[in-house]
Structures are given as C-alpha cells and as structure tokens.
Image 1 (cartoon, helix red, strand yellow):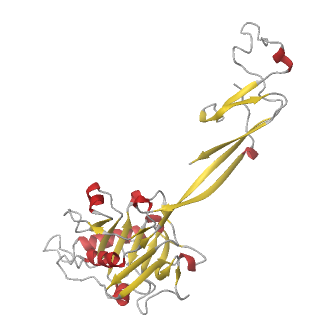
Image 2 (cartoon, helix red, strand yellow):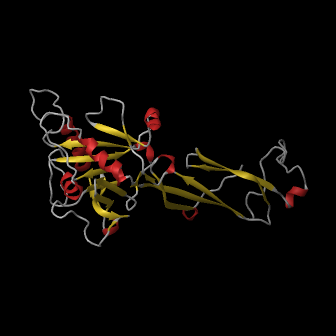
Image 3 (cartoon, helix red, strand yellow):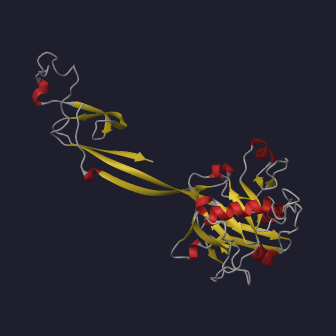
Length: 330
C-alpha cells in the first residue's frame, strides 16, 4: 500500500440536472383519473387521486386535491358552537404558512385576493427532489369550456422566491409560456394560481378559474360542499396532466495520478523479505512491476472515507503513468 497527498488541482466539482417523469409507470402525462372511493377520515381535508382502482387498493396515489377557505366556509364545523372553525379553514391556514411562512398573509394572485383556494399537491414519492418548471401542462374542462394551464417560468428572467422556494404564476398556455405572447391572465381576476415546484404544489385562484370555465367552489357556512371534487371533475373532464421532475446531482471528481516513478513497488510479503527487507527477486530491483486494484481516499487523520475498485488490475511500472478518475455522487 502506498500513499500520496492530493493537490487542489486534483479535485473538480460538477453539477448536473437530471429530468424524469413524475407520474407512475413513467407516463409523461396522465389521461385517466380516479378519485378515492373509500371513505377516510382525511376526506374533510383532502382527496387522493389515482390512475385506477387497482392503484387505490395499492395505496399508490398520483396527487391530492384540497379546498381551503379563510373563513372556514364549504365544510362542516368542528363544533357548531364555534363559527368558522372547520377543516377548510385549517387547510387554508396550513398552506398559507407553508407558502408564505406568515399566518396573517392571504393568498393573492396578481392583485386578486379571493377568500378561498384549491390546492393540488403531487405525491412526494413521485419525484426525488423537485418539480421542473416549464413542463406543467394541465387542462381543465367544464362542458364546452376549456382552460389549458402552464407555469410562467418561460416568461421571466429572474426567479421569485417565497418562504417555500421558487414561485411562478399559473397562466393559460403551454410549456412555460402563454399562447398569444400576452400575460396569460384572466380578464379581471389575475392569474389562475401559483406553481411552487420546490414543494410540489399548485395553488388555484377559484375566481379566475370560474371566469374561464364556470367552475367555482360553494361557500355554505357549515356544510360539506365537496369542493375538492369540483376541481377533480374539471381535471378529469380535461383528461390531460403533464409534468416532469428534476434532480440536481452534484458529483465530486478526484483525479488520482501515478507518475512513472511512483507506485512501482509493493509492500506485499511475497515481494519483500520479511527479515532483511530486500527485494526477493533480483529481476524486480531495476524493473519492478505492480498491479493497481484499489484506490482508498483518506482524510488528514488517516480515516478511510471512500474506496474505489478497478474492474481489473492495472499494470504499473517505470514505463507507464496512470491517471484514474474517481467519481463521488451525492
């Protein structure tokens, strides 16, 4: 075994972006949607969406839909004696804290501040790191009315950040840009929502969606209006939901160089006499030969941090120089 201290020039850091589909079975866009059919205690807060009944049995959802209301309307009260305290108010508050980090900031969409929202959260097991801006294509349909949504990532030069990370507007268009080169907003109700790729979340502006296709949540004060189902129906009728994910993969490259005069001898007992320390075979004195099989990376306290194995032994002698590249992914 021989050691050599690495220099600063022997290290290189590389960053790559890897993209992949989000949905199950590597489907680039969902076209079939099944709302959870089995009653659950979570139904008052959110509804899971699957691609088939078999997926529901397996407990393998694609995404979930929730309805939130700042005043608690559209869902049954926790306690009839406490007005406005209901699951929809809880949902609104949870997403508000997640997105803004402030319980006093209401959702706003380019000047429009509705009292309610729809939230669509992609199942966390569907991706490794984050959603990919510019790949969102969602069609909402109600009768003869259609609305094709994307995010505004292709129309901005500088990203905007909230407490939860990057934020883009939901606009009418495809692949990150509006169709006509305009802003993609509704006529009078701002954008159609927010796209938050770092937390796999879409927040919908019900006022803008209602203006476009005539779908709006009901706001009865103390009854379950099944408002999550209303957004699901629009997605199901649209029949198309495309989205990709991306992962930033950081790699450390370590270049291990063995010059012609280095690593030609071995400390193996079969190479050196244990009693005298002499080379056992005279032919190996002036023309030694060794075989590189393993590279170990140590820190300054002589602790082994990583081991790289060669696929086959590499011959090393005074006539050869070797450059080995070790790649560490994390």
